[in-house]
Structures are given as structure tokens and as C-alpha cells.
Length: 146
Image 1: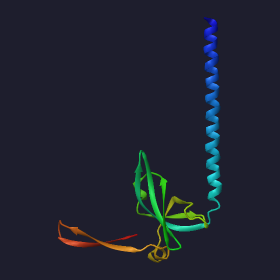
Image 2: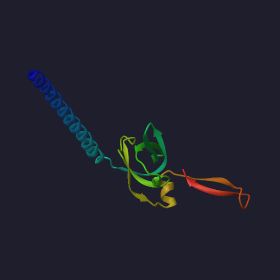
Image 3: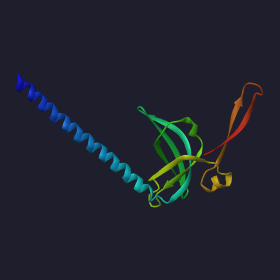
Image 4: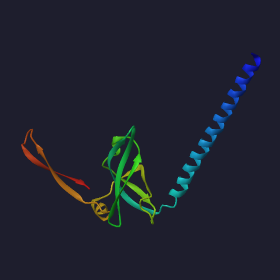
């Protein structure tokens, strides 16, 4: 009976050691990947203005979709983030000069660019109309940056 208990304790100890070793390996690997991306971000020299457009949902995750222009071409990217207060606002994007698809958005500070800066960045203003069926029964002209 005592030998059986000792064998169970020995097996439990081995399992616990293996679990601890695996968890340490996973922690070290994720830390390495995070540091690798941080060092890679420092090489991003290109800057552009990005417009946060919408959130897409995939399973339980919400992704922020934003777009920006590089050399007249529109690029879009997704980032895992929450909070509706950042939608339809402008932020700075840093990207790699050789591969603009490698980029990241800086959500710390919202940009307040003027219309000339936005046009130079590649954006255009689009007019659209909404119908006011309440008081005036007229179409109201609105505009947004696209």
C-alpha cells in the first residue's frame, strides 16, 4: 500500500515538473516573439495617416479595420482592439518602406489633420444625402472622408 502511494506521488511529481517546464518554454517563446516584433517595429520608417473604419468580428475577437494610402494605393489592416470611441478618426501609421503591408497603427494620440493634409495623404471627401422625414421632409447633405 505504501509503495503504491509512493508510486502515485512520484508520478504526480513528474507530471508537475513537466507542466512547469512546458509553461516556462511557452512564456519564454511569447516573450521572444514580442521582443522580436518590438525590435522590428523600430525599423519602420514610413509614416502615413490612417482612418479607422469599422470593427469586424471573428469568433469572440473584435478586429479594428483601418486604411491608409501609400503611393496612391490604399492599404488596409486589422488589429485586435476594443472601444467604439476610436472609429472614424485619424491616427498615425508607421510602415516598412519596402513592404507597406508590414505596419502598425499608433492609437495613443488622435490626429486632427486639416483637409489639405488629408487630400495629400490620399483621402477624398464624399457627399451623401439623408432624408429627414421628421420636421423638414427634405434631403440633408452630409459628407465624410473616404
